[in-house]
Image: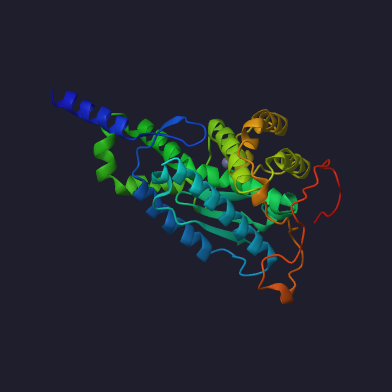
Length: 306
Ligand SMILES: [Zn+2]
């Protein structure tokens, strides 16, 4: 009888933690309280920043932050319209650029995002940044970290004991978080499943489109990624993908859906990255009047490569 009650409590708990992901509508199981995810994330993120070369100023930093703010606020107003604000209730968006050769970017729960300078030559401009930013924002909105950890916990602890264990084993949960995000080794390298990567790609296309960035540029970005990544260890957002070709194919298949969300009137001026920061123009956002006339040309132009 006691066992039965335990199982019943476990089942109720599982049902209570089931929620639907925006855009894809997939149901997911998140066992960890979001508040707990957020506080673990905040601590880990701040510790990472304290021990990293955070870029303090300059045009690239401004562009990363601007792209992040545009996309996160577009998503927030979408969620508000859809009455899904609960998803981002305690989010505190933060976008930092860190000096490192790695061609990578990642996001932690609660909207804590990091870009490495090593990815900027591949993103090339703000639209390229938006591709990666949309993807990372999507991981956070979709609570992929929580889901991944929940799967890990469920495996470790089993169904019925889970509810009890979560409330009593704070230390174990904390450890799992650190493990999941590979702290101490490759921070942020949470191994998402292929399902999560595909979902973040699709949601990312929609999110960038909502913010006025042309999602049709995304396959070009992945093409550049492919060209640049020969022989290198794959960064987070491609770690579990089979191939660039498949990814590009899947993005193109989803494109008509993403374009429904595309609002070119919101388009940001497209500034190039990696331009030496002119000290004079620090006050205003972008000194380049790139305008919204996105050239929908082929991607192979060898403009700049550093
Ligand atoms: Zn990813």
